[in-house]
Image (tube, rainbow, N blue to C red; front, side):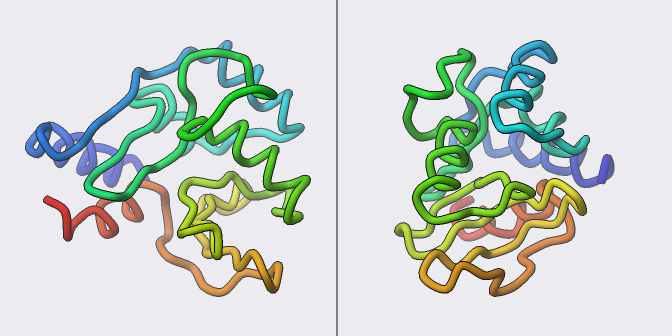
Length: 147
């Protein structure tokens, strides 16, 4: 996982005109987000949030945190707000953190237990597939077409 984190850091630096990144957040803000969602974030999600907060490349917007604790009254790319909202609207499982919405039909989520990125089907309320073994590989693979 750390190897892929370093690879993604290099990729973002090499393609800084393609990647649009937020501002990393503090451990204290991450802890507030965990408390708000009633869960613990795995190391990969914590590294991502502390390094970038959130990011986008091309049309892909990877949710995360936007630097404030107004989780109940926020908007995209605030993944804390989006995850909480979609838990109540479409029953996204508690063990998932939504990273990307694919036109509202499916969500790409990090499984907080395994760190894998999975595709959650909104209509069928089930996992369709596993996209990547970790968050960093997921972003690198998905972003490749836009670099």
